[in-house]
Image (cartoon, rainbow, N blue to C red; front, side, top):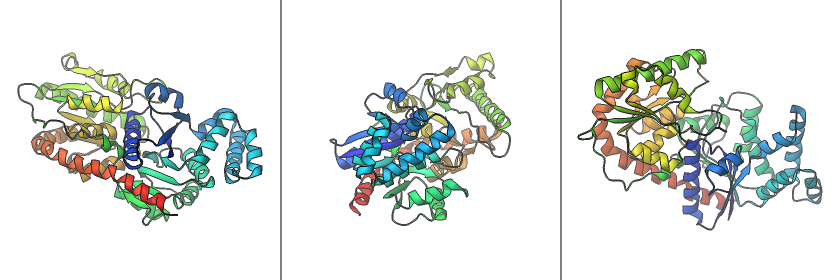
Length: 418
């Protein structure tokens, strides 16, 4: 069976965890002999970090690099869409020779795929550019290939061209897997509903380590170890991004100081987007900014981990800690996969939806409103509830792992419907 996984962003370890989880789900369903190719916007860099995957450059990225200039790029996308519609016809085969060899081979691979899976995550949201993703969906459908959107959070969809195109492609997808009720509502508002929309847990939960020994919280005979994941966030809605980031950084710095001075905690700044020069952001830069605000006595108990780590490595690293303060949602998910309680800081609705469902709703912080006082209060609540939460995490994550794996049979059933 030939499966293409598209829209991957493997240099983000959270997205790489989704990719690993999705492949695990698909192999669990269709067997180990399936042939998987992964289309990623930064395929060459991704291949260096994950040599076990067969990477290809994303279709839109291939066009962008070969068709220089805005108008040439637009004409090239229209030509590729037309060519996808007539690919199997004699005219299509003749016109295909006008394409660069790599792009022609990619379209041929799409045309021969048994299944095209748009990877899970959060990319069909207003904060990001949608057309490159929509273009990929349109090529898939015009080639007559079955399209499945793996588990993700999406919407809302404001009026405009992208909304119209999304309605067209999503109504023709075989299956859309969503992580939360908010995404289901956004699809309802778009006019996409029914049995083709199924809710399931994030694919990264397929990586959960449920066989790990039970954790003791708080630990006996040593200080608490807390990992903190931070990030840059350029999409503040209530205030200018610079002001929002300043408040967020100050809040995390104050929490760090309180943890060290009042509780003797050992801190490690560790996140899912770091140590990769080719990626657009590096969370360790924000961690360094926070560390620069700390007095020397506190800084001596703080470690900045700037290295790149694969998803399975991050799970192991989080397992060495007793608690994780997670701004990156997948830092929180990978911590849960290790059985570690999480204090979430939400920058999108996906984090709120996930942690409310897990019983962490009262302590979930909104990046738009977080303050030193609210973070410290949330930490104290988590410290009090920690023993109970640790005992509950294993069973709840087990349910989420089952839900993530359940996406496989849903895809198989969707393929059976013609």
